[in-house]
Image (cartoon, rainbow, N blue to C red; front, side):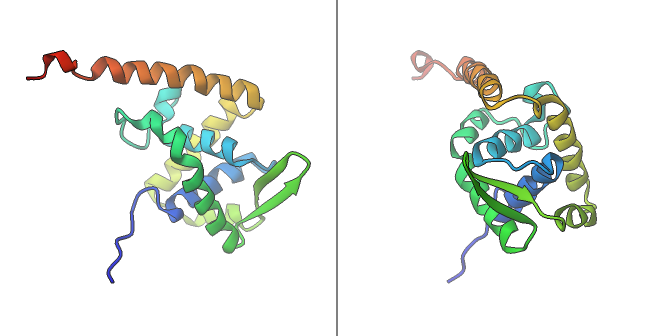
Length: 162
């Protein structure tokens, strides 16, 4: 059986993006929701007033926030299996952190995309890292509504269809 492997948003790609976030956050550990927020900021940075986005601005990109957690979890688990990240269980729940091997691993990735990921992770943590969970969620809630309105404004009206 020949199974196709998705090139984008595969466990490997999301794992590397999450690892990039965790290295920038080090020594802090992040939960899946915070990882999802920062993953979105890495690939759609222009949406948040940052550098050019790494991924195309598709009309349905705001829906990515709703499905991103499962994809990110698979990626982080892949990084854990390679000893590049670790799971921590604490009073506030499960969080993830980069291991000592993570930064040297990322340093070996020299593609323009990898460098751009590191630059956007640095930008995202300068801008959003200090925000607590409530403030970060409020930012995304406000922008999620705006992005949804922008998409709805570009859809053709059903009344115009034959």
